[in-house]
Length: 225
Length: 378
Ligand SMILES: Nc1ncnc2c1ncn2[C@@H]1O[C@H](COP(=O)(O)OP(=O)(O)OP(=O)(O)O)[C@@H](O)[C@H]1O
Ligand SMILES: [Mg+2]
Image (tube, rainbow over all chains, first blue to last red; front, side, top):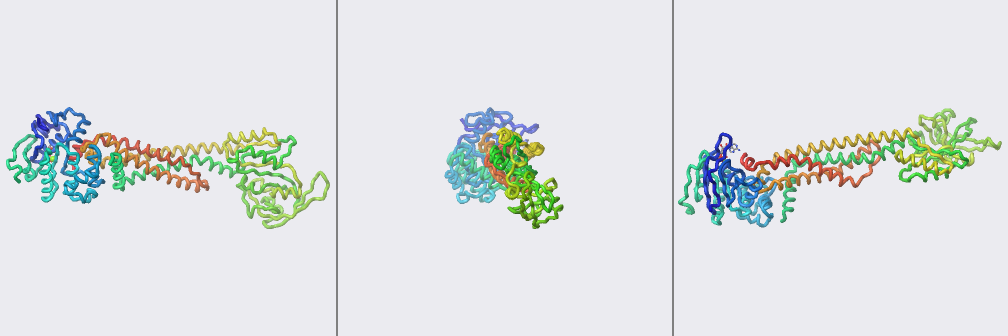
């Protein structure tokens, strides 16, 4: 069975159908890119997959559990145990250092372990910035802290909403390299992006438009770049 | 690293690295705690202070002879004093009045214990100095009448009416002039030993006592002195002692109300600050939730911060409060305050409780934050 199954989900805000009858399956270990114009429902879909929101209609089955039927507490647990989130706006706790920010995720998940958190930062090339506050880090560095935090608990799925939206070319490449590495390790990756370069390196790409899936294409050149 | 350690690390980081924000809350708490502990100190010290103040208006118990033929002398007075608890006893002054002649005029002279007269009659205003042996304190009226000034010398003579002996004479020097605005200005005051040197020994007419005690304790002491039946009967100077306790009760009620108002104000201030803190940190709360924080851990974290603030503020406040109470005491009652060590933990507990209460509402609103909404909006 697929890791994630969306069955005819809709998200309705009053008159507006932000998501309109979407069905989608994501396999374990798959690398999926979600693209589409602004307002097409990408973030809405992301929030539902990330268990931060529930669909108005339809079923979301994650690892065999229907999240529409879960309580808020249940959703919190799934989020904590299975999902690593990466945001466009980084969202770091501004009074905690880089390594402390990573440890916050450990804190809610299991046990804070500074050594492990430092290793995660080393992995994204930030070992020497571990004791810096977010305000002392560049945007690209902050995003990498965010990635280290998303990965620290070894989530089954990493969800990234516009992870490179605020980054320059060089930092974007660093992030893509980290994704490639993650994919190699078997992590399921779902990446929302405007950026064709980020979309094209994924295994599969869906394009949303007005809350519907307009395209769903497999990348034939996957792994060649 | 344990969870508890990380918890402490997070909340201390929040307090230290966001100090400009936290200083407002901390200030509110410590000022509140300071006023609280200051007022409570004053509240408990006021009876002592006020007691001392009222003593300034004279003695509150007098001893007279019970009239049953037993001697009423200094020994009897001291025996009576032994019925009073030493902590509340301030002073006892014997008075023996005899008529002597100065410049051939009859003058009432009181033999007394000059040192304790200063304690039981603190309102005496003296121009010059308190008398030593061989010196006299002359009442203002009498001084004008006799034409005496500080430094003048005079001879006083005493003749016992019962036997027609030669009058005994003694030379004295005026050490100062006594002004009280009362009947004391008609008399001359000298040491008891000086009086005895011309008039021989004799009974006291009255003894004035200053005691720092409640109305009930005073009554009990007076009863016990009178019933001891040693030739002494004790009476309370009622007017002063009663008004003393009424004023005390009113003053304490006032302090109590002010304390309550200050507590409420502190709570409002802390609640406002905490609400601002929560609003300002909606994103952070949303983020923590998206990382899998349960409602409970959000509550624990924010309450932890609040309570830590309460603790620090309470400690600072308790110390500030003592300084405040001391300041009030020195300026209003012109005496130092007595520090109550118990007040330190009590102030801290109250500050923590008040801060906790003030944090409840904002923290409750914190758990309603929807991570999806907060994280989306820039
Ligand atoms: N909480 C909400 N209430 C009402 N409407 C909403 C809400 N959240 C999203 N929408 C609407 O749903 C639609 C889809 O929004 P969504 O954020 O998913 O777009 P998006 O594809 O992520 O766009 P972008 O590329 O600009 O981030 C938009 O029209 C938006 O206005
Ligand atoms: Mg979006």
